[in-house]
Figure (cartoon, rainbow, N blue to C red):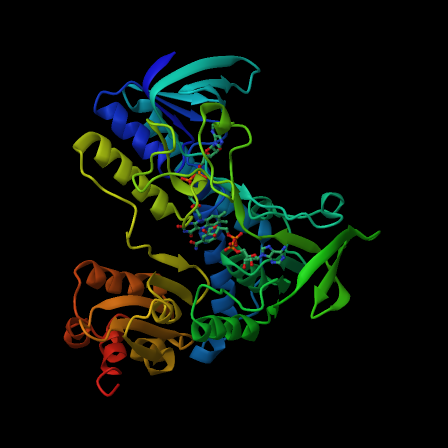
Length: 461
Ligand SMILES: Cc1cc2nc3c(=O)[nH]c(=O)nc-3n(C[C@H](O)[C@H](O)[C@H](O)COP(=O)(O)OP(=O)(O)OC[C@H]3O[C@@H](n4cnc5c(N)ncnc54)[C@H](O)[C@@H]3O)c2cc1C
Ligand SMILES: NC(=O)c1ccc[n+]([C@@H]2O[C@H](COP(=O)([O-])OP(=O)(O)OC[C@H]3O[C@@H](n4cnc5c(N)ncnc54)[C@H](O)[C@@H]3O)[C@@H](O)[C@H]2O)c1
């Protein structure tokens, strides 16, 4: 079958791109091997944030006495927690599938695509049949999957990934997590709040080494205060399953070796692109050193007419970035917009509690670039809204250019940190000098109002 556009993977770029191209009259095929919606809907943002909401309820119930409300200790009904997550995920996936199937000019093909040549693919369907497909344009949005490190014994030791752990029917006694990145932080806090003992094992000496030390340190304190153990500079050299079903990990740290036993093991050490089945080499697509698809800044691969979007490229792996990739590609192809992914603002939010909302440069990145900067900092203990709601953990931090006073970046470790960060993102989009935020009127008493106070700290700096 010949198409104008063939899109492989129905992730956060593939689905809207397929619908958009079909709508403007391109004969379009969207090939998906599993479930529409990809990682975000089925294994990522939607299920994890749904579970995290349950964890937060348990936490708030346990801490309500501080606000004068006495409650019995919460009982976690894990089966109900998982059922709620499944209901929300299934409904979201179903809505998306209905929309795709109703889109005129779009064929949703269920099966696994493999290149057979330049712009040619075979789709292997679940029933064992296959279809040959050809596209004038091809868009790869196949996403990424958990990376499993080559640790001795890993294949004979039961482990969970971020996908499989979201189907647990009982709360683990002791969850040991390999890694201390986004997934480890979010899931570590979630399971601690549901009642698990939690240990994070991170091989780097520093936590979240892309973030400023004060921010990473503050978050570490917050998680440790909740009872999570974080072991930095720790490598796992061997894994095994004990006779009682527990897992045993051999750890190496500072030249010494010791063992750690847990009831469950979650591997959260990064993700690798889904390319094994796709076989991009058959189309002559060049990969990066780390094995992701290499593109130019308009997302075209080394083969003209073949594009790569989302996590399958090397770059920030977020839903909103994949969606922005779709906008860049579609607007360039359809409107000749000349958009590029270079220098785009990349916001992100780690959904710990408090959240870490981030945008632009950190202090350390700005200094490494030799930028002349001022740094504004405010503890959440000084934020009126935080004091009133009993949520004073965290801090706000912003980096401004010493000369132009433009905001270069912000780290907001606070309740609703992602939302507060977005206020500063808009200021950055408009290239506002920080004084506009310092003197702007925000409703009282909101968290965002304290951005006045954050930038006031620069008055005497
Ligand atoms: C636990 C977790 C939590 C996350 N939380 C957040 C968050 O809070 N915020 C955020 O911004 N990001 C979050 N992310 C990251 C986010 O989910 C991804 O960056 C996002 O989904 C982008 O994915 P994508 O569009 O590149 O592809 P995906 O959504 O991964 O879709 C790829 C699709 O391609 C299909 N596919 C693969 N190979 C083939 C093939 N050969 N043939 C046919 N189909 C194929 C797959 O089945 C899949 O459906 C999270 C990720 C995880 C794992
Ligand atoms: N809120 C969000 O936006 C959100 C939430 C979850 C996941 N995600 C996305 O999913 C991606 C994957 O998350 P992740 O947590 O798996 O990866 P990550 O890259 O965020 O963190 C992995 C961590 O594991 C460590 N590590 C790697 N190998 C190790 C080993 N052998 N032993 C000990 N530590 C090891 C790394 O040093 C790193 O700190 C993220 O990069 C992010 O893009 C986003």
